[in-house]
Length: 266
Image 1: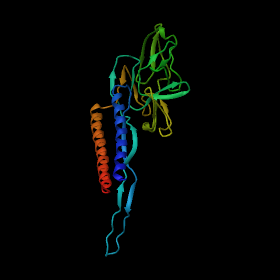
Image 2: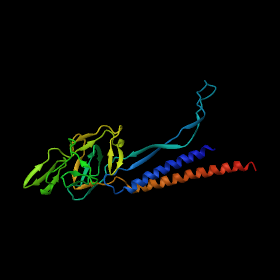
Image 3: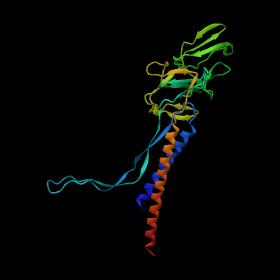
Image 4: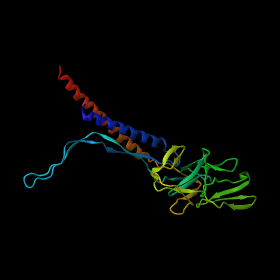
């Protein structure tokens, strides 16, 4: 078979994956805290027809290697961890992180991380995500306010500390909402429900007070929007579509050549 046919097949597979990632980005254009994905390619192994040669004194110059590439393959599917715009909501428990870091939440015995800060108090006074995970403070403990139905007013500062008035008395919780930093945010693994988990390449999670040691500050009454840029995604979609079409043309042309070879027998 012609090498070009297999190169075309590899290109089609890669551009299909790129379209899958673009489709997921567009589907999450209004998902709070979503970080877009990006696909990169790299060339596959090359077949060497002849190697390089060094110059032979003054009688002969050197020659470059002759190689035929055998297609492309996926290099990375990156998570682009840039800041999304903060959309004001006016709701105290809607929290956005301005800067680096993630909220730390817990489900069962497993700790997850998220940038989506639409939080709620359940009927036991626990601060939870929309899916019910407990929001943790810098000590790794769930944030709880007893007798939450008696609270008269509540506010959350940029430092992540929760203050509330109960029976006319002002109380400020000592341990703030944690903002967790990683050495490599791109190494986090998406697990759905706006959650990430740490991996061996993300680095050890470091819970910090908001605004300290490079951690972002907390903005109450706002939510971080998706960092997907529709104009960029549509442009990438057109590029991927044309790339896919070009690779199908390679296969079609290779097939026509093979057909001519078969017809030589007649």
